[in-house]
Image (tube, rainbow, N blue to C red; front, side, top):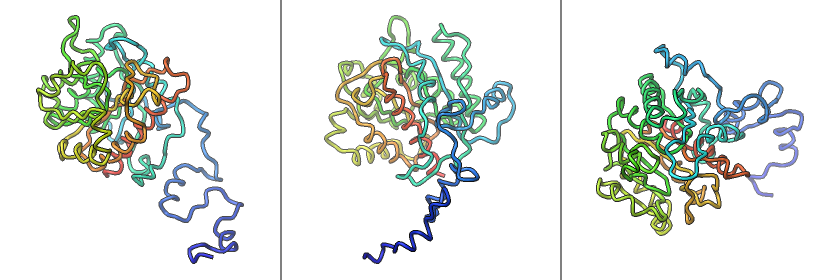
Length: 351
C-alpha cells in the first residue's frame, strides 16, 4: 500500500456516507460551502428563473442606474444586449442572451484558476439593456452607450452577452469615458474593422474601426486572434492602424502558450477589454452563429487563452453572436456561457 493511500478505516472515518458535502481540502470546501445549503441540499439547476451563470437576478440595479441612484454593493454586472440589427446575413443573435441564460451548471469553481468567482466578487444578472426601438440600429447604439456609461461611472465592471458584434462599439465608447482608450484581446473569425456599408457604419463588420476612430480603442494595444475566412480582404484597417492580427493558421503554428504570451505583451498593464465572438470557434463546436467559418479554434483553446489573461487590467468583456436558432443542440450557447464564466473567473482571480 502506498504511504499516501489511507486505509479503509480512515476513509470511513473521513468520508462517511451519512453526510452530504463532506470536504477536508479547504479549497474544495470553500467551493462546496457556496453550493450546498443547510442539510446538504443543493439548488435544483432546472428550478426558478434562468439567469446568466445562475447569478442572482437584480433588476433593481438597472432601475437605480437609470434613475441616477448610487449603486455601491455590486462589483460585476452580467448584462444582456438582445440586439442584432447590425448583422449582414443570418439574423438571430438577439436571442443570444436568452439562450445563454438557459444554460445551467456552469461553475461555480474554476479549477484551473482556483477561484470561485461568486465568493470573491459581488455578481448579479441585472437584466437587459433598456432600448427604445427594436427597429433603429443607431438608437440602440445610443441606448447601449448611455447605459454602460452609467454602469462604468458607478464603478461596476460589465460582462455582456449579445447580440451582434456591433454592440462592442458603444460599450467601448462608454468605458473609455471612465478609463481612457482601452486595449483589447479580440477572439474572432473576423477582424470587424471594415468600413461603411450601404450608408451604415454601425454594423457588426466594423465596430473596431469606429472605436479606433472615435478614440475609445487603442490599436497599438489590440490583438485579434483566430481571424480567417473569405472576408480577410476587408481587414486592411487592422494592419494600417497597428493592430496585431494572428490568423487561425498562425495560432495553430505558434501554439496557445506563444499566442498568449504575445497577447499579454500587446495589452500590457493598461485598461483592457476582452471580446469573444462565438464564431471564433470552428462551426463543428458552435454552429449557432450568424457567420460561421470553417477552420476555427476549439473551445479548449479559447478557454486557455482567456484563463491565461489572469492579472490583466480588465475593465469589461463580451460574448457575442450566439444565434440559437441555428443550433438545436444548444452547444453554441453552452460555449458562450462557459467563456463568460472564464472572463468572470479572470476578474475574480485578479483580486
